[in-house]
Length: 198
Image 1 (tube, rainbow, N blue to C red):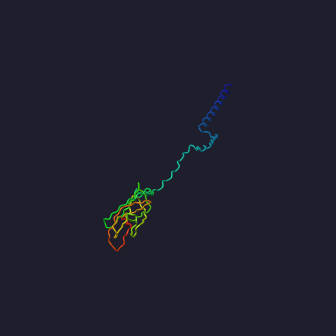
Image 2 (tube, one colour):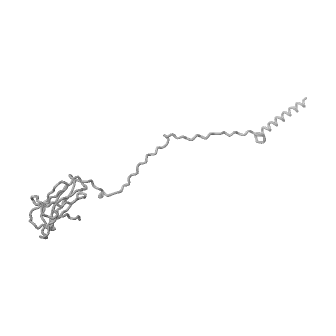
Image 3 (spheres, rainbow, N blue to C red):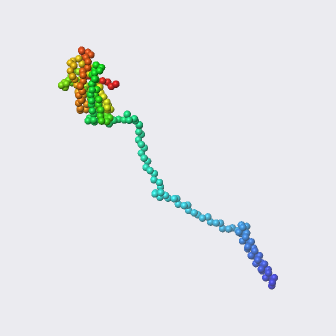
């Protein structure tokens, strides 16, 4: 009876030892029994980040490119047009060269561009125009003021009476006393003409 109990206990111990051995081998990978594989987790990709309109930077509006500008000096800038009331005419005469030069000086309160005409009439003291070729000469003027226009009276062989130059510019009349030129050719005409600009 005692021998059976020992053998039964021995068999139980052998079974337990075998079970423990199987467990140890299973944990160490020594068992060839199939073990369930881990299931891979499926993750959904993160939704794309959506930026709010307020977060987007606002670009400044492009400024218009400056117009190309060509540099000029102050002396070449166009002047404003003179008004008739701004123009002042002064006249003087001299006869040092034998001819009588009648200079008409045009000016204004500030520099401006004058487009108009200048007329010169040689008269006696009573206002009578004299018999001179070109008397009453009118010349167009387009110039920046201040400026001057010069006329020349030559070869006066008649009476040496006092004379005056009647100068008309832009609706105004300027009178200047003048002395007659010398007589260079008694048979030739007396002439009044515009002196070419020097």
